[in-house]
Length: 419
Image 1 (tube, rainbow, N blue to C red):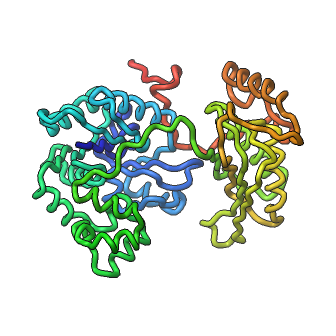
Image 2: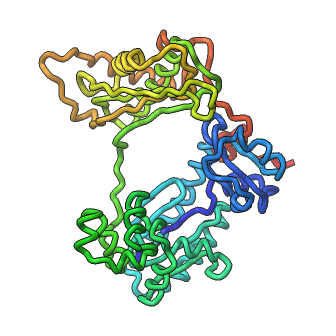
Image 3: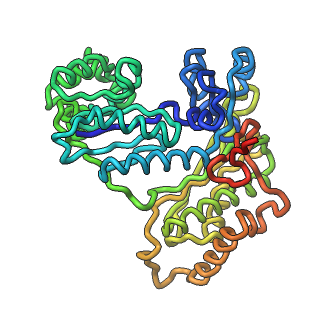
């Protein structure tokens, strides 16, 4: 049996743990630079606040309905997620952390256990130890566990937050209840294609011929169909120690129009990415640079562009990566545009230990020792202590976070004080 554990309204729940006065009240969390809504409590959803809503457009509605607004506090959310996952690991060693607020568990050798009771115990323990409410869905496959979790969350009072699909009757009932567009793994285009032939529920999808599913949705679609039939074809994914790409993208606090300001931002983003690259002991073989204007300003000239550059060799050097990032920026910069966002994505990552160089390659081995020294200084004295000349030496760029709560669990000076 598989279990999908999902933290309910996770970002909002993290804020409520340390500020319980907002329990039962509408809460929204904003993205970087307080741009748009990325998380909502059930109360905010009921008031019609859509996901991705631009904060400046809904400012009056927030005020009218007394909706509490928070800036995203990722140090807090990341630490609370880690605490929840550590509790879940005590129930079974077979765990796949699917996202910051979701995890799959596989229960092998639990044939004589009442897994619903285990789910209720898990829910109670996570709530008692962290204050985070969770929903638990149990089923013979990962795709069915996703559906079981939705049922547990939708009918929380009836299920007590835990639902187990442990019979064929429950499976068929759950499939009939689930719209085809809500099936885990069915994207927007596949949903449209399925709806066009009269497939509106997961049960309709399961009743399709195997040949059609394989032809239209490839072998992955056929595996999904097997999963929904109760035959587990999708197993837990092994934890990969390194990311396949590293992206550093930000919306600017203010509009930028001058090239030198954009150059400073791209350099900073590249160095942040390079530091992450070295932390996971990887090198990049290519990078992508992009810029864009403000899509929410109808009066501004709209522009977005990007370019991908192949590096001469796999590297984690600040100097090499920044040189090519600025080359990319020069090729896509357009005067007269009001820029609102930019980013750098490091691609084609390889382990540093297996990096190969050619006979005609510029030797950057001296950079390695220097990069290690810079990283050591930043770990000891804090970030942004050493910069390149193209960065602003006097200014530390900060995100717009007007509604930021304390980092209650990761910063000693921001912990709760009892008076």
